[in-house]
Length: 202
Image (cartoon, rainbow, N blue to C red; front, side, top):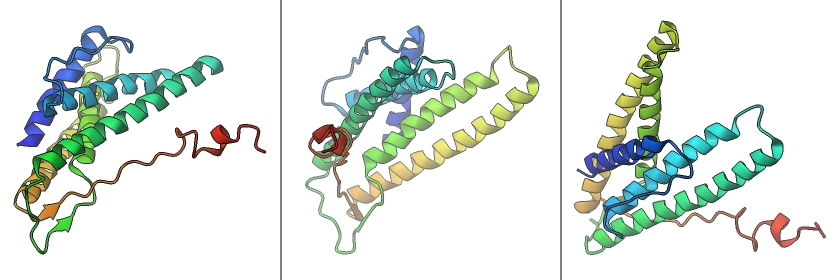
């Protein structure tokens, strides 16, 4: 099942990051380039680094100039994240290019890669919520509340994993077909963002 592979590799990436817990720690992706495993590890590594950048930028005492620098790093990370999602969808498009959809096949509201994107974020939520349940400096009330939230996240993770597996099975048997829309983000494109192509607002 694809979800089992996803969750395994996401766990590896998150644990590997937290060995050093350093935003600028270089990635060590040992999976074969162009393999689905390589893409999944890369995807979760990007998400994990960005998770911690989002923490930093929310410091109420942060210097505004430094905050803007972090915001721009987060924007660049978001673009990289989107690119990797599209690479993952390209993998599935290639994988099932010879599968003929049934006459009554339907399209899913999300492509497989965007479901995988949600699973990656969920893996991070589970990891960090579990950390909150183990804090020695937190109150019992805090840890009890976080345990309740962790259980909800684990249930959500199981449901989403099952949904991903069902989607892939439906694609394999022709009950659903893939139709991927490239993310046409406009604010990073100097030809589409008016602040970039017309900086003087003329």
